[in-house]
Image 1 (cartoon, chains in turn purple, red, yellow, orange):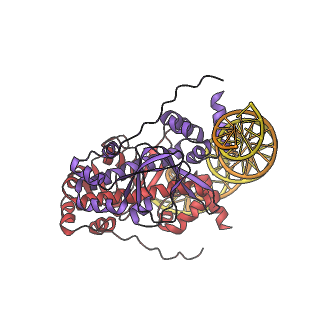
Image 2 (cartoon, rainbow over the protein chains, first blue to last red; image 1 turned 90 degrees about the horizontal axis):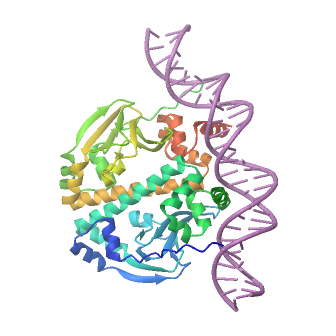
Image 3 (spheres, protein in one colour; image 1 turned 60 degrees about the horizontal axis):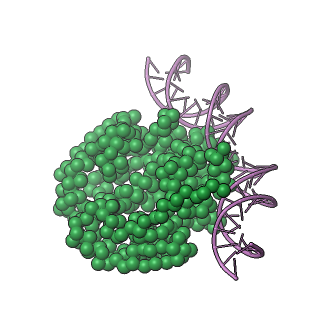
Length: 201
Length: 201
DNA sequence: TTCATTTTTTAACATTTGTAAAATTTGTTC
DNA sequence: GAACAAATTTTACAAATGTTAAAAAATGAA
């Protein structure tokens, strides 16, 4: 076997960096958010958010990697989002419409998270224009990412989508098992194996 | 041939209704937006926004129906969004990141539109917290719709997706030619014809 | 290490969807 | 209504992906 390449360890991402990366906030506004934030840890395998519940919790990932998945009526799982250091974990339907969410969030590694109660954030949206615009930017950025994925799913075949992920986010493929990756790409694990075999040749 | 069922004509949607449906605004904030809005009309077939340009214009649809599409490197077209009365037309990439958009917008009917310059809206986001939250709500709602489509694309086969569209938005199928509908559903027109033939039996 | 478990790959075959071209229907214009 | 153009359906075949089952490989715990 070949010697393994040195693996770049994922860096912890501090909450201030996470907030500012979405949209630069004045210190005073940032402090208002930080006031409500607590740090928590959960082990690999923990289910952080459950589908069918109205979630009050928002998390930001300091360290670790997670997946969002939904279940079909036949109980098939579909992974439609991965989150890693620096990203926000939100049950969109709960956050936006205060209704039951459609996603489960499972931790794929031991995680260190920042916790924020969505009711507190909602309050801040009402009273601080910088935070309101921060929230707007967050949704807009997620929207573009999601729309681009929807488009790419159609323009590119499974093999191209895998290669794009491999070059764009190689750490995901290193850190996440291939069954989840296949689901995220919209194919079966068997298909993904075929694609990987093809590329090796 | 059977006598045709009476066709329900699409209603015009006034700009105040459009704005309030996204998120109820105080009259003063609404007036600030209305101040920058003008009414325009274009004929069927007109290309309202072009991919590869940084668009300054935002539109709201008073009357008519439009599609957003992207072109692949092989010049295949992909329709990924339909807009009708009450909806906002935005080049997301231009609006969010001030960068070249990936979408073309084509009018599928003669349209009456409300026009708003995005620079003016950006200004309002900075100075009016209600408008900032209105912008946040808009992005959040679009995000949920897009994410749900991404998930449905995987959980349901083409036939189910067509039936869902048929029951959920029958007017789209009545008003839009099937080639565009097929593209929107993520299949070819031939496949859509097969599905329609199957359903009739 | 060794064993048990989980993950990944491989194989054979079925099904779905795509491609290209022709036939049909629909709509428009004169 | 005739003639033309555009949209839709049908057909035959090809390619991609799914399904099921089994084998192989990798991983993790004792």
